[in-house]
Length: 373
Image (cartoon, rainbow, N blue to C red; front, side, top):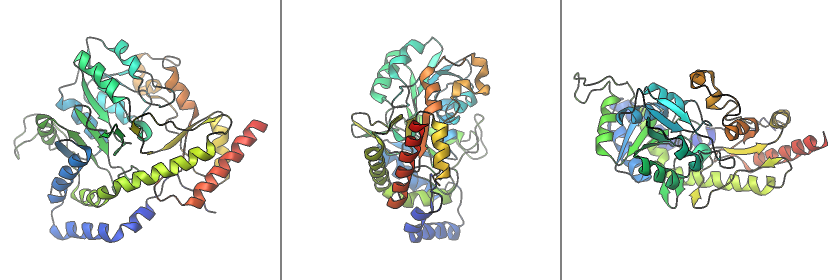
């Protein structure tokens, strides 16, 4: 058997090839490549899917976070509470907006921001919270929103890994002032290049982000503030429009794969399978376990032809770019422990059953060897 990748886009493309190729051909024939009809239609379709009034197509999920904060007038001198266990874009966007990240530790089992720790981190400078729906599991939004309302804080959801995830039937990206999505090719709704979007129920926020995405210009060649060049490409929008109606099916396939993994692996020694919070709909962007002596197990899986990934080996508060915050090892212990034990297994909707079974058998053997050693 060939090496089993953690992700492959090939089968999904082949299953939708006729529709995708036709959509791309239409864009090429139209000669309209920037902010055309596909972007406008995708924005409407995405807003309806998430359950909000507005969506704005952007160049990336990172830009969505940055522009959301800027459009909410968060900047120099402000603090933004967020998770230390995420991709760097989460805190990078806060820095790009001119604000300072204030890291709060995670819940050890969900890997998400611990809502019970947020209130103690609020200071007079705190202006917003950026919860991350990590690996496809929604953060505890009802509790987070309660804290935000109590202190008058803005909430910008980092939904990059969780499009379609729900809490009690309500989709992520509809709880806070804004939801920020990535359409990077590996995401649950992935394009064939970079792409992102912001969702909101605030028309004035959407209008300002639309201005910011085109160099701070609401009228051509008239600029009211410094913005970015951050537009979702028409070609990417056309591809995403083809895929969006299939997203529920893609996510259901991910959940089925996850449940197969969990049923087979839940009793292994020195390993904890992902949890699913009550009332939440996990969409398994990644299937991430907690594995003792992770690096040894990972090496054995590699030898067995199974690709794995570590998301993320260094928590954000210990990254050198955040050295000025003065946080040291031991300051956020749950995030630090997660960085030592988190291991993601192959996960994509089209993962063949026989390949998943090989992953399971290889992991069972790797863990047994670990115990014997």
